[in-house]
Each structure stands twice: as structure tokens, then as C-alpha cells.
Length: 344
Image 1: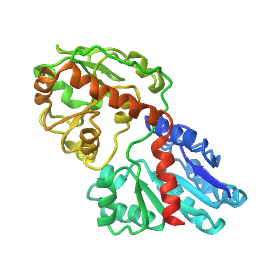
Image 2 (image 1 turned 120 degrees about the vertical axis):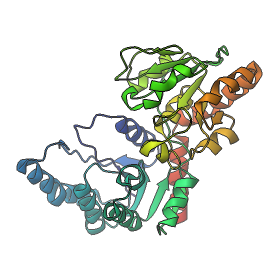
Image 3 (image 1 turned 180 degrees about the horizontal axis):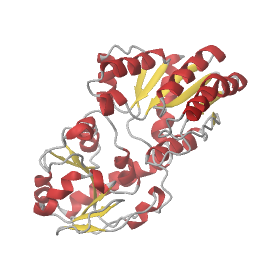
Image 4 (image 1 turned 90 degrees about the vertical axis):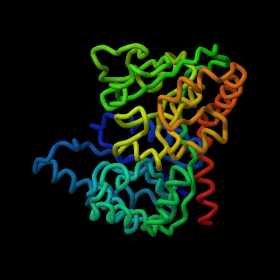
């Protein structure tokens, strides 16, 4: 049986997305899946006539040819693909050139993340989901949202994104009540108001401000696979928007549905999580005791003050157990097996 993972990435792509998708490829090729090599050399910013011709070549000739030769029985497509045109051509070619079952692993739902009130684009995206034979959604909240939108294909929940992390785990961290935030600092507008926070917050990532007030400390920028080496803090913070009091804005609201990849970075590094109470993953964090959740960042200092070293040690032990699962691809391997068994 020929089972393939398809990851259609622009060779120009430069963001955190490729890490999540590359890890899925790595973990699934440890099972009975192989990578279908679809290499597309396009610059999404290039709107020239030549670029359009190239896109048509990929969509009408190159992709269908590779798919036809694959003799695929099962295809897992890592969604979304950065081009709406190529996404449609890919779906068409899978249906026309193969007899494969098409599963989608959702990394992002653009309707929730970007399209907002754009009804036409939202309907086009939902129409794609309805063509799949099965979907892996992030969690129960995302699954419920898909079902409410009329997506009736089998849907399983991933739980968390796995995370290849070669850095040796620190078995015991001294409890210094410290927190780290890693990410694109230019997008973390809440940091502009963070001078009033009453806990130590260390920052990693590109585009830092020229200076940060106490209690913030900037500690540099590193590639994803190296970042964990530099974490000496007790907790990893997941927060979005321009407010300390709540997560807001498009990406803050999106946390009600998605699994931020940052959660997997921290957990796979052995760091328990500090997260917004309304986030989709809040229940997971609390149930597995791998961190704590708050309505507002103004609560964090107080929670840390009241936490005992024993309580922290228990959280850290739970996190280390979970880190091993994330480093071995436990969640994607389990989800794909479950989806295949539902499909029969």
C-alpha cells in the first residue's frame, strides 16, 4: 500500500510553518508513510506574467504527473498550501489522477485566522474540507467548529503538534518563578505594556525593541532547534494581542481554536506553560497539570508567588513525560492510525 505525505511549500517561505510540517514528515516516515516530493519554486510575492505561467505549469502538468506516477493509495496533505490556485489544482489532481483516500492535516484554518468576514473565501475553504476523506484537526474546539460549518467527513483530534527537539532535557530546574516568551517580538504588542508586570519575563526572538523596561530581559534570537538550549526559565508564556488583560486581535481570538506551535516548543523543552484561560488548549494544560492558565497576565505574578517548589516539581515531571511523547511523534502517529481505522 502506497501512503504519502504531501507538503507543498514555496522554496521562498521563511517563517515558523516549515518546522511544524518538516516534523510531521520526519515522524510519519518512521511509520509506513513516505514523502511525495513536490518541489515548487515560486515566490508568493511575484505577481508577474512569468510567475503566473509557472504556476499554471505546476498546477496543470507537474503536480498531476507526479501524482499519477505515485500510484498512491493514501495521501495526507499538510494544509494549507500557500497558493489558492495550487490548492485547487492539487485537490483536482488527487481526485482525477489517483484512487487515493485524501486526508488533511490542518495546520491553520484561514477562515478563522485571516479571512474573517470574507464569505466567498470562507466558503471556498470549507468546500475543500468537505472533499477530504478525513481530517486531523488540532483539538475538540476546532473539530466542533468544523462540524458546525457542515463538515461531515470523519475528524480526529491531534491533541498537540509533535516537536523534534534534540536538546537534552533538564531533569530538574531550580524554581525561580521565571517565565520565557519566544516568538516574533514585533507582533507581541502586549510587551509594550509589560513594564507593570510583577514577574521576570525573558524574551527570545527576532525584531526586538531597542530597549525593554524591567522586568523584561531580551536574550537573543536562535533557530527553532537550538532555542531549547538557551531556556533556563521555569515556564513558557503563550499570549497574543496588545493587551495584558486578555488575548485579543485576530491571532488572540484564533487561540480559542488552534494549537499554537509555541506550546509544543516549550513542552518539548521541558517547560510547563502559562496560557490564556479561554484558549482551546487551556483544558489540556490544566487536565495534564503541565502549567497553569490565567484570564490576565496581571494574575501571573500572584500565581507564581503562591506556588510551592513541590507543586512546580510535579508540573515539571508531567511536562518531561509529555516532552518525550512530543519528541517521538506520538500525537501525529496516534491521530493518523485513528483516522485510518475510522475510515476502514
